[in-house]
Length: 61
Image (cartoon, rainbow, N blue to C red; front, top):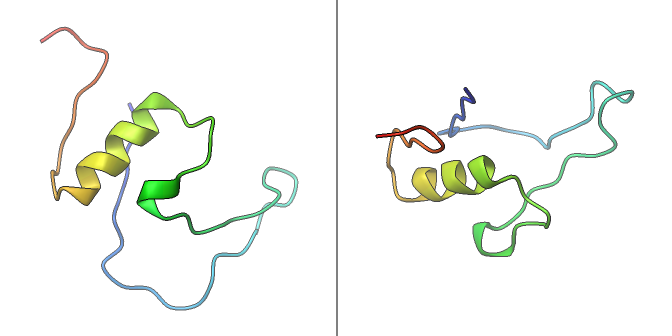
């Protein structure tokens, strides 16, 4: 299970606090996301953009 959260407010810029795990943080426009992108991340971001609070993927319905 992956959980994603949409921030309603913030200040400052993202910064790397675990340099042994991350090289950089960047802001990406939803219509220009980097590739490759994990499918569940793409699904979650699309749902957040549509204000959809829950998505399901990979499980039988």
